[in-house]
Length: 473
Image 1 (cartoon, helix red, strand yellow):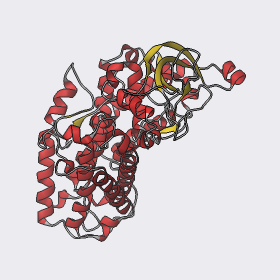
Image 2 (spheres, helix red, strand yellow; image 1 turned 30 degrees about the horizontal axis):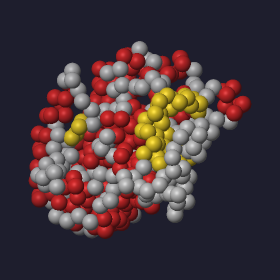
Image 3 (cartoon, one colour; image 1 turned 180 degrees about the vertical axis):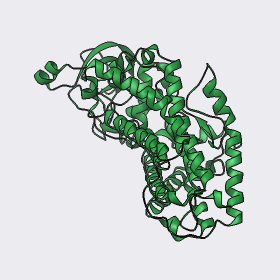
């Protein structure tokens, strides 16, 4: 079938696949380095306890067959190794069928992790990586030209990411329609980056222009992905520029980067296509069958997009094959942060020596400037932002965090930037307090060197100690 392949996109495929492998590598590295404290046998939300409640058919995972922390680590590090091999181009050294299987391996491993990840993995970019990764497996290698069906479906994912996000904004917070959301967003976003303070301090008229440009990029430009070249490439390039702007303004894990990766697949990069034989019949049948399945599964995300009760970041099947996306349907006007502290005093009181735990990414010390972590995902720091919005978001795991801090648990402390207590001297009590944070002004920054100003709001968790702990004499 002459129409089946698009030889002009062979370089676009190559760049897309290598970039996707890099995102996979970051995702598996994040899992390998953080899982013990979050999900391990002694973690805040232990996987074995979760597996006892969830059936395989509702959340397929290798860990239904066997779970141990050692086995999870082996899966995560295997994912890192396979991703690194794909990044180096290992799939191009294999027969077509073997290359497909190699690409399906990280998808299956990461699906197994996401489906037992519970709250820690309840982010839209997890499903986005899985959906993109599954489809990428059928994009082929150097033995065949890129299939048109797969290229179309990659654009369909990108369309849903951008258009869904645009719709959720227009239907959600009124500030998006009034063009005022960026008066608050850079200050109240989950994890600010090193430039977020400066983005917040841009003139308000420029913020209005940014919001208007965002609406155009998310509600108009995605339609152009399905137009002839070079218009489709121009639309994809504009999306890439927009995503890079978002990369500079905050830490959104790999959300922006996986969106850029998808946009790369829509670019027709100038290059002379190598001569390859026609695609084998079995490959054509396989790709068409996968395409038909994914289009059939797309009806629920489409219904969701056109619904007035649109939801965002929802998976409609246990394999995360086709999902719905969206972000920041509402924007917080005020930033709150939960500050966690411990003391060595046997009897805590207001004048006790309370020492603050320092997190890696979330705001804490007003003088510490935010760091750039994305695309690496600091899962605990992100969930602490939700905890500050409402204790209900932290009900499952916050008590477990406090318990492990009282034990000076090594794996939990590795998630933090710094513990105020020596490894052999755990705190007697831990408490949490809620503060309001705001960016300092230019004058305050010059005078104090602090990028944040914080004000105590209320007690979040009263002084707590381990059950059965004995006071020291």
